[in-house]
Image (cartoon, rainbow, N blue to C red; front, side):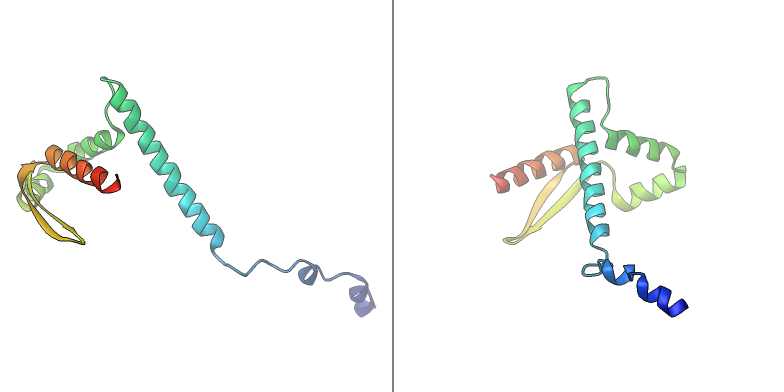
Length: 121
């Protein structure tokens, strides 16, 4: 009787086989969607901060909050190891290495942004 009942019932596992052609494909899409959502949120936050004199960039606000909570010996170690606000930069690309003179992080960011914009133009 058990065999006959089983023969009358369709085998749903065979009627609807699982999609195993690309296991983990959904994870890749979810990861990409998460990265895009995070980038969009940061971009919007930066745009709002740029348009308002009262608001601070979300990245800057988080960095300042983090630095404020770091113990003083860790801050001192970071300054000794990585230096202060001024940096000497070496840009490496397909054409070789370009050494930039010592400049502030803001100047580095502006110069690097201009270089990227020129490369994309």
